[in-house]
Length: 290
Ligand code: UTP
Image 1: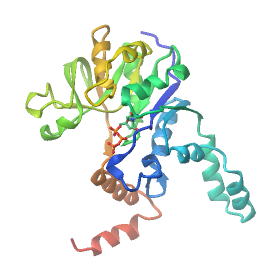
Image 2: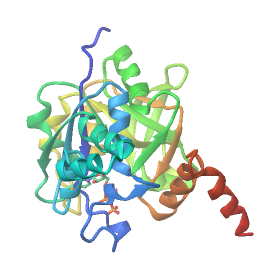
Image 3: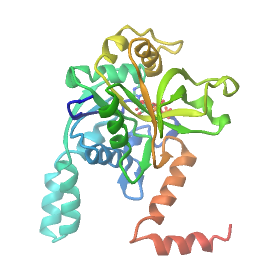
């Protein structure tokens, strides 16, 4: 089925980041760096590498630093130019030239489904990619590009899924899959945070989605859960009753930087992948004699 190219990307970044308190008391968790680059920049780079260059960040209180990060920084640029620090200058200019970034506020953290609904005026009547900044994915083909390939083939919403040890399934949305060949599935059902014993499979949904605009009226009608939050999974279940939804077991390594251990592991792996740090850092880790 021929699909018009997807151009838009939505990044819900209005969560409070409570798992990283006190670091997130006055700064967004999305600005915490892996080595020297804020996590949000890795994910925006994935969007751009996947061909999405109209980016909407759904922000909340305390998120100003993200806006500044993707903006021009004239004083800093002047300073670096003046001191002849041309490499650093090129680096920070690249960030503000990455893509066109717009912002919309989610006034209260009423859940991921609600955050996506806040992007509706900027997305309009087009399919769009959704990126959760906690999930940093290192892959040969950018993860979102893998989802978009499935979208272009099948013409329906696509979820990124990965196999997860049973005991961890209770933290995720989990799909009941019907194999369509290779790594692509039709989603027959999806359950939010199941009891691992009742989970319909070991395929957990992680933070990449291609959604179609018919999700918006559904989210607008989705009732808040017991904590007052509108859950995306509930909206997707309703959408599933109206059209086919697909899932792809993507190729790549996913780092969960939204929790402390995952963040630390990612930091070590990213540092070891950096030519300017790897040798010394590896020698240091070995010297720890753990
Ligand atoms: P999380 O459930 O991981 O929440 O949200 P969080 O606030 O980011 O982190 P913790 O659990 O308190 O440490 C998943 C994604 O949905 C966004 C978050 O910013 C994150 O990218 N989100 C969540 C919103 O944008 N708005 C919300 O109301 C809730």
